[in-house]
Length: 120
Image 1 (cartoon, one colour):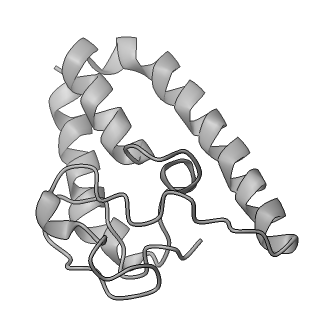
Image 2 (tube, one colour):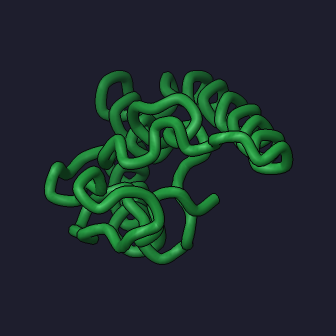
C-alpha cells in the first residue's frame, strides 16, 4: 500500500528534479550501475517499501562514501569520472555515451540523467 506512493514520488523525482539538479548520483559515477533513485525504485518494486528501507539506507551510505571518494579524487586532480556516460537508470534514450562527459544529454522522462554527466 505504501509502495505505490513511494514509487510515484521517486518517478516524479527522476522525471522533474534529477534532470535539473546539475549533478549525477555519486554512487553511479564512482561505481557504475544504476543511480540511487533507480536502485530504490527497483528494491521497492521487488520487496515493498518497508522491507526495502534497510537496503536503501545502506545504498545511501555507500553513496555518501562514493561522494567523499569523488571529492578526494577531484582534489588530487585524479580521473574521477570512471563510469561517466554509463547510461541511465531506466531509459536507453537518455544514454550519454555518444556525447561524452560534460556535454548535453538527451533528457527523456523517467530517467536518472542530468545535462552534465560528469557534474558532481
